Length: 164
Ligand code: ADP
Image (cartoon, rainbow, N blue to C red):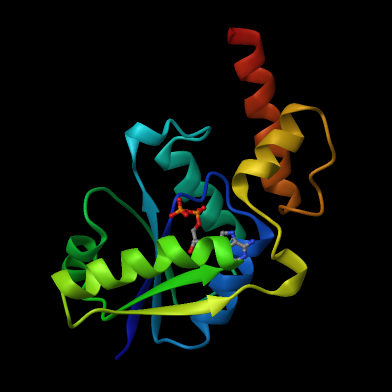
């Protein structure tokens, strides 16, 4: 049985992430989407909110679980008994960092392999950061994220603005 982890911040999940999730779920028996609880990154959405949103947009995929995690990815992979880590590669700029991470993880735990899926060309420019920036300036983000996620982002930004 092949169980893989697709880790990330998913702050928030975009069509680019969803494309990798759908394609990788067809390659493995079970896909765990690992949602990084990294307080240092000060995300727009809490880890609970990010998990919930991912659950809502992946409800039609049978072999998937959304699980929050903190600390080292290799420790999480060991605990989850996953033999593979999946990452998406968008552009050359992703490559250097991803290569370092994959090689470091492999050095720490040689049994765990990292596999890369190259992004769908349609989404190669897409990142959670730019989606948040466009939304903050009132731009239309409907081509970048599912409707449900777009509504949550707009809501969250409004709430933040009323506090600031
Ligand atoms: P992280 O902070 O770990 O990079 P992200 O949520 O930004 O978390 O990304 C998680 C994974 O999804 C990474 O492997 C990243 O390269 C990939 N990814 C992000 N956006 C896209 C996209 N538009 N197309 C394909 N893969 C993507």
